[in-house]
Length: 336
Ligand SMILES: [Zn+2]
Image 1 (cartoon, protein in one colour):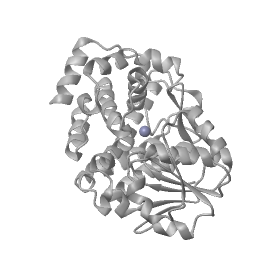
Image 2: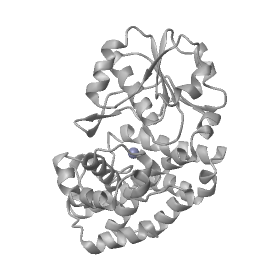
Image 3: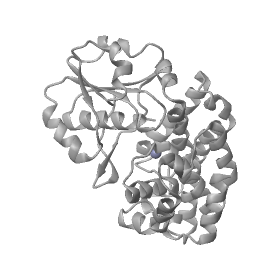
């Protein structure tokens, strides 16, 4: 089982100065840098990520100069960009996630946008992923808890995989695998069972989330680039939302909305998962994502076309027909 070296501990960021190949460049976000810059020498080269559009990233590479290693410091965008630069420039890199918002840090490929549609490209293996418990705990709670989106999606992922199997739509290369599906369901169940630890972001809660996010990140490659046991309709809903609204989302938050809607489409576990998402404190009301219900409906009505045009995995999105009753029930469940 190929998994990235991961170290969980405290006071890890300062130590990177004695570890990373010099000179190194830090890839981070403008709003995060003031919080963490004291860990570095003032002369440290820093790049602020403004976009994960492939064009923007490729442009930057030309300006990056001769650095011997790369440090990714941040949430999904900085982490994905560090992976992408490492791949393109063939340089070693170290990852410091500042929150648990996504599983990006544990996967080989970078999520980049090409013409506003997400694509996973590259092959990057970090020297190490450093999980600094105090850094994680200092992230806004709403960003950390949103990370359950990339874990509870195992449940809707497996639903969609079974649906594709039972409706004869299954991709040849992704034959249903009971063992993969069960491992995913066990990891997701740990989050449900220990939701109190996650709500409070205790050391135990963080470790449960890391274990599940690691599974999501690594088993995609380990299963032969099979995403079916780790994501499904909920991510497709999120991609459709992103595509049709052209807005930026907190990944896990929008995915959690997709999970509840996906469960409703499958007519399974929607109340249960909505309650857990609620208890952990992830707000899935579109208002909290600065979008309206009309935009959610538009993204759903166009989901089938979007999924087919983009050539995403097959499942319930390819067949489901949304009607007013569904929308009424969806709004009731989410706003309840
Ligand atoms: Zn995700």
